[in-house]
Length: 86
Image (cartoon, rainbow, N blue to C red; front, side, top):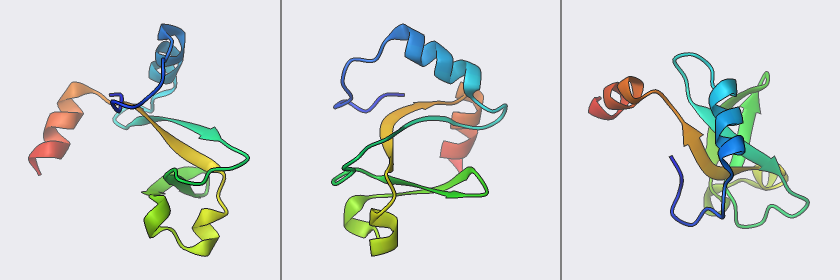
């Protein structure tokens, strides 16, 4: 899945994300920026993503996080149907 405002993404990037996707989970492409202002921050616990917090909702601690959500995700279609139906 790609957000409509995502810049050009290469097929190689998408293939690498598919390869890295955990089984039964979501693959999420993130990036670390020097200035992440305006982007959703990736909140992790023990290395795992536990939340994506948008700039307007972020605490000062979360605003200091430089890893952001690019809006590029991969997930199995069956899992998506199941998640969206609940």
